Image (cartoon, rainbow, N blue to C red):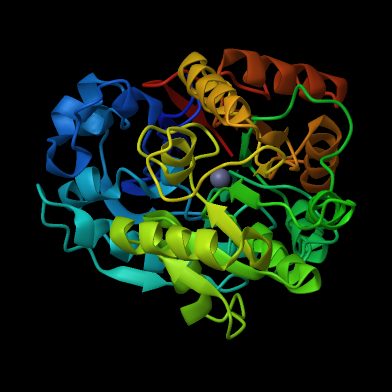
Length: 447
Ligand SMILES: [Zn+2]
């Protein structure tokens, strides 16, 4: 049977829990295995690391891979494109069901290893294969995976390309076409153009920001925005707290550099801050100056916050978790007065992050900001640029690669629709060359 099957397992109806399977003859490659955290957080007492896969599938928190039973073929590899939880978070719950290696870049592999170690319900013994961005790996005699480096909001991200006897399948989830990233290389346009010339049978692409017009601003812009907020003030002595994505290493690095210009000591606090930062340091993605302080445990964090209060807020730049108002996070504890850090009138709280647009997050964030304001904090929000391509970046990638078929993934129906309209402008036809898939559906493509 000379055809390729694309199985939409998860992440086609929603943001999160991404998983796609590509069927090539009787061999299958799984792309990503992610979690949808808002479905877990809604149950306040959920302890994910002790929960069973089927329970999490019922909650809609991880991909429903039970559909894989109906597909003929053997899974030969699980390929993950980057270390965000919506791409790797379901590995501890699902990977053990497949007798296959997990292939990802070194940073992603380090994060996956950490996930597996924290898992309490299942033993995950799949071999971990660290494949460098830019390299290729022969999965079987007929399938090779190529990693093309691509900027995103976490380091060591790639576009994965499966080269098969029936043609190439490109998986671009997630990416931005950042020509001036602050860590890592700009997109490898010559590799993408080479693929385009050789011919790509199908491109599976994220659609997160496909309804936003124009192009995504570079990470360099975010760094300048942060510098402007932190240094561009006559009130340089006040308390300042930054909150951002712990996994956004480029942003954390910018904060370190700006803290030095401010003459303040950067103090990173939170279990996830410690995890992502140390892994990035171990692999050489980031240099940590001698004065940087990192605290993961609550008692150490509270001790550090006490020290900041006694020695003077103007000497430190705390960088904390909690920008989405997550219950129990450091910023939320600060806003509740549950730490030794006292917010005083005129202290600044800088959100170097967007608000994830779910009603629960909005409510948490609203409560957080209100409590901080009541204590006298001045709020600087959205000091941030996105890690996801906007519409004209999608246009550019589509025209550069010119796949025969294109499949929107990693988004909800509205995001896919915006993408499909853009693809129609580029000459694609819905149902013929651009395909709308829902979770659980399979698309067969003939070369
Ligand atoms: Zn991502």
